[in-house]
Every structure is written in C-alpha cells, then in structure tokens.
Length: 207
Image: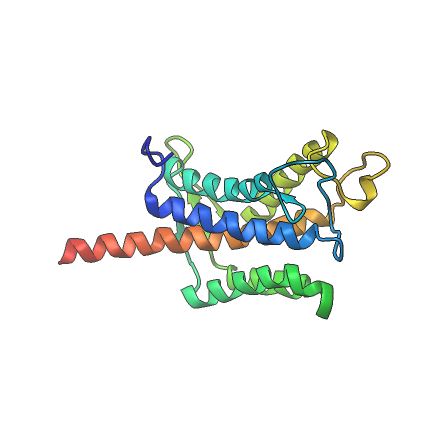
C-alpha cells in the first residue's frame, strides 16, 4: 500500500499501532481465564491462542478509515479538544480489559461519548454533493456493519462465541455497541493523525 502510494509511512504506523492494540485485545479476550470468544482450529500463526490475522482485522478498520478520509474527502466540524478525545478513547480501550475485574462501565463511557462528540459532525463527499452525519451515529452505523460481518465470519467458522460452540447462532446484539466503542478508538487515532498532518502542513505554508 505504501509502495503503491495508497498510504503514507505515517499512515502505515497508525495501522500497525492498531494492529498491535487489536492483537493485544484478542490475546486477552481469548485467554482461558477470560474466554470471551475463541479460534478453535489449529494454526501455526497463533500467538497465545489468537491468530495473527485477528490483529489485521482490527487494522483493516483503521485502513478503511484512512482510505475513506482520502476518497470521501472526510472533514470534521465541532471536534472536541484533542486531550479529551484521547482520554476518552483510552478509557474505552482499558474498559475492554478491566470490566472483567472491576465492573463494566461501557454505558457510562457511551454517555460520555455522546456528550463529548455531541457537536461533532463528519462531512463526506461520495461524488459531487457533500453530506454530513453526527459522529456518534457514524460510530453506531460502523459498529452495525462490523456486527453483520462478524455474523458472516462466525457462520463460516472464523471464530466462535461461547453460545456458538454446539451450533451457530446470531452474535448477540450487544456486540453492536461494543464494536461501536472500538471504532471510537480507531477513529480518534486516525483523526488525530489527520488533524496533526493538517496543522503541520499549515505551519509549513506560513514558514
């Protein structure tokens, strides 16, 4: 992708970062002590029970956002202070780990998400006309699409949840919210990169 010019080296670093964050989450969630889901089939490329491709699946979401930013001319209005966005994304990521030990705060984080991004709109231009969508709604929509993809993947045995061990069943609807929250982490990382690059380009023009 970098060689072809579709992605920059800086964007590759972001994708690699999310690959590592995703793989760490996968290793934790598939550990015997947690068992949120599993990859039952044998593979030489597993790392502590999680295959390497699981990290690439998370990284693919970041790559999708980076490509969307370019091809759909994404821009943000009403974006919150950078530190607030980063702290919220960090709290969401940590909650995926800590809720097994100290309680699940996803609903509080969801409320915080809506408050923080209440005024944020994502503008996109699929062709000529520009459209916009409230950013929290965009998170929910992407989470829903990933949930559909997850149902297809588990149907064909890519991985399985505890309720799918004996026979396939629909992935629980609550996963839409979980994926929506996970998308927040990806989006903030990508947005911060894009906003940083924009500020850097402006500073170079004024020098």
